[in-house]
Amino acid sequence: MRALLRWIGLPGLGIAVAAVLAVAAGAEEVKPAHGIAMHGAPKYPAGFAHFDYVNPDAPKGGEVRFGAMGTFDTLNPFILKGVLAAGVGSTFDTLMTSADDEPFSYYGLVAESIEVPQDRAWVIFNLRAAAKFHDGSPLTAADVVWTFDTLRQKGHPRWRTYYAGVDKAEMLGPQRVKFTFKPGSNRELPLILGQFPIASKAYYEKVPFDSTTLEPPLGSGPYRIAKVDAPNAIVLERDPNYWARDLPVNRGRNNFGTIRYEYYRDRTLTLEAFKGGNLDFRIEPTAKDWATGYDVPAVKNGQIVKEDLPNQNPLPMQAFVYNTRRALFQDARVRQALAYAFDFEWLNKNIFYGLYKRTNSYFFNSELASRGLPSPEELKVLEPLRAQLPPEVFTAEYQPPQTDGSGNIRDNLREGLRLLKAAGWEIRDNKLINVASGKPFEFDILSAEPALERVTLPFINNLQRFGITAHLRNVDAAQYQHRVEDFDFDMIIGGWAQSLSPGNEQREYWGSEAADERGSQNYAGIKSPAIDKLIELVIAAPDRESLVMRTRALDRALLWGFYVVPHYRDAVYHVAHWNMFGRPKVLPKQGVALDTWWVDQAKLATLTGRHRS
Image (cartoon, rainbow, N blue to C red):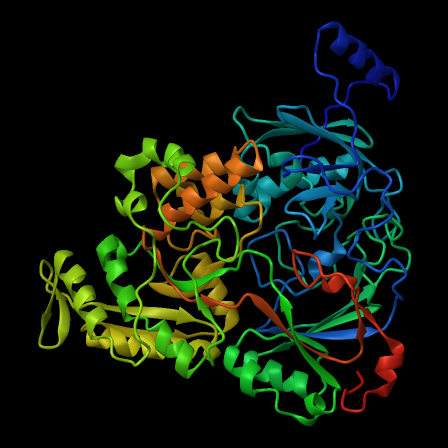
């Protein structure tokens, strides 16, 4: 995360005196830099013109319409309350911004430069005097410090977890901020402090910070909220006076003149709206729909373009997630057993058109994923924790249960029942009964995605063969969000996105403290001292090689803890869009980079099936 600086006196004179004293004392001289990388040096040098994956001359303007599912009831992005509207994040600026063609590098946005010592014990951001909010008021160090402190006091609980390593934030002057870190090694903090959205202190002196609202908040980013039609739609407009539009980090980006998010109840309705010409762009998440759902004239005549774009990121772990806060799922043997009821091979053959691969890592599709047996480097990380980890971490490669795809899971059934028996369960009158309590094995699977019934119902049917009764509970998006935030579920279909440079967010995903923090992403309720230690080792990794080894070790511990029943992923983006866009020739490693696309007015003029707003 980011850190701010303490005021040292008069600008210029105070800094000069401090520098002289530091040199006299033999202290390290820290020079301002335009950017920072997690490991090594950033790719782009000082004075670079633009990122390599943009078209710096991309035309601006035009309207684009995206689909969103469910509903929304707030425009406040800082708090836990409410369901946030799509796109609000683009109305706020941050101290720094990332490059999508590097694993983890940041360059100045609101901050013109950054100062970091070798040990990364603190960080100073020097802000641009030109930075301002949408009402023309200046964005200063006071706003940065106030936002940071308020996020930790009143914001979403994850801010406290994410910034737990920061001791304090201080103003060193109107455009200088310093963040000082707590003892320990957390090399990521200077980078992630560059990520939080900066709010206006003056604005929130008049408006409650910790309340939901449908009044557009005062931001500073490339877009402003132009229209709110809750709970159906929100419209953003590109700010023609955006203060940072000509900075190198923004050239060729944020090209759409108007962005409209239309809300629909589920994926099926969203797809139909897209094919009907009411939405313009879609990343298709469903294999069946990608294979069969686009057989429409607009695709055949080229008005809708279908294409597979490579996905070079770690793929999210989508899974059935156990809530280990429930007594039913506290025994790892029980969690392991239920995985034998998930027949991926049959699903892939009969429902997914063979498009998917089984997920076998929390960092699937990347060098961070564990593979084979632990390497000598991994063993150095794992050995001190051997007594606290499952023995399989050291002796076997994790692979989820497999079948032949025929639907016959007899072998899986036998192994699953063996594990359940060892955990104190037995079959009585075709019901799985706990020997000690006499209670049957019964639980709910909470979901807000009707489209995932085709995955969940076969799983439930196979569980019945174990004598287990599972109920699918489909609820609306708002209720689902609230229940997940309160950990009010037995099992969910959930998941976690990862980056090429994992760090502090792992605390919120798997850390013991986050397990009791309402609204955290530790859905499974994991409380493991060994995993806590591995998380801290990942965060403290001094170089890329050690980060990879430590992340693989963490991956093994999570997999052999059986906290989820892994699903499947596809290593491409299935992209469908109306043929109205231009885009750069280079696709960055980090994703589709839709913020670098633009509306091609000549193409747009030829479309007949797309409806006008």
